[in-house]
Image (cartoon, rainbow, N blue to C red; front, side, top):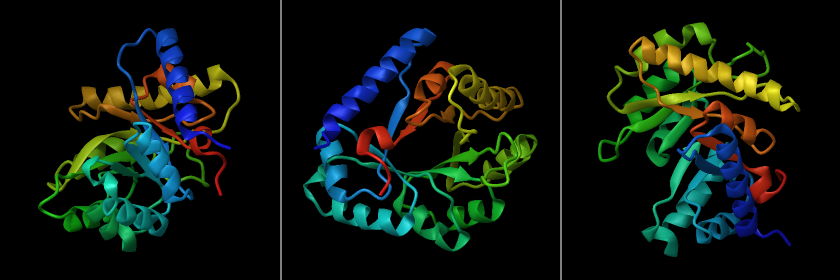
Length: 231
């Protein structure tokens, strides 16, 4: 039987070893990707001290958010990250229920998120999704369009631009993974030099977290190695 607490401990150990290899002291934030998993598994992770959760599917996520807001965990601040593709007709629900969106790549969606973010909540934290290799099967904007897009987002008062996100090609070699992640880091650093400070790098999953940590990831999106394969 799966022990989520043990799985989380194993992930943290992998992160620590990767940090040591990279010679870095700042620990990246672990986002437990709970998509398709039942609320009981989220509760197990909460009991183990995990408070950041990532969801890809809005309707499934809203059920969990509602159930957990009514449970005994209401005194624990759960941070909800939406990390899947977002349709414009669902943007208002993400704006109302989530703390983060990692997959922003269209101005129309940015405007809807801004318009629907409740005034009593802090601005929605967002990351721009970048399509590093211009893959037709993946969402995200071209790296050359990031600066212009970022500058437009920064004019929206109910959004807070935090960083960049990418889902690179699935590679098995550490060097190949590392090279892809460094492309996103370089893009982030280029934006910073151009006056757009976006400190966060949302990159790295179960199979490549070590390379992501070594390349400077600040947020890791880990699902399979915590909760098991997707249902």
